[in-house]
Amino acid sequence: MDETILLVDDEELTRERLTRAFDKKGITVFTATTLSEAIKVIKKQHPKLAVTELNLADNSGLELIKKAKEIDQEIRIIMLTGYGSIATAVSAIKLGAVDYLSKPADAEDIMNAFAKDITPIDTHHLLNDHPVPSLARVEWEHLNRVLKNCEGNISLTAKKLNVHRRTLQRKLHKYPPNK
Image (cartoon, rainbow, N blue to C red; front, side):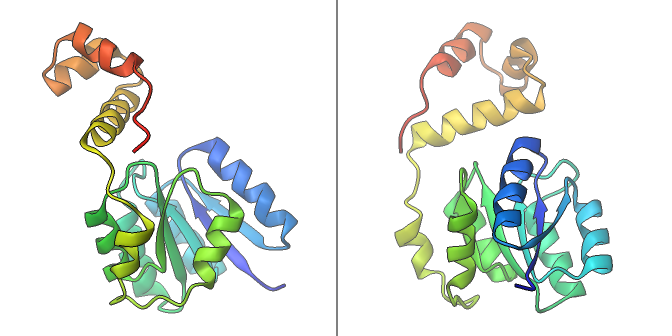
């Protein structure tokens, strides 16, 4: 198999897990953690496939899709994220992504998504395959994303969100809503 794939994610565990899985499938894997690193890999290695996280350390995965398509129209890209929404999924597809997957996704999920023949206009499947998360789920994910950006500092996170620290702690100690 002469497949090549670029994995762009700032989470080391995700990159390592997917790299091992793709290696077992005989796929050559290139990795990057930022938009700028990913662009360098695309220009130098010309991977056929790419998987990018929505939230990159230095930019957005949406920007990566746009720039990657400017460099190589043939590259097939999948957006992978733990903080998804229908709006970003549609944006990713309009920019040229093949599909949009929620984390955690394994190598099999990703390869199945690449196997689909989806055109940029065909966004109907997003509503069926990716149900809209509940408001409680979106809130929980947002709180955790801001907490991660604040490096786990509860007080700073509470200040940025303009909520009381104890309220934030109560919300974070709840299990994430299933939907």
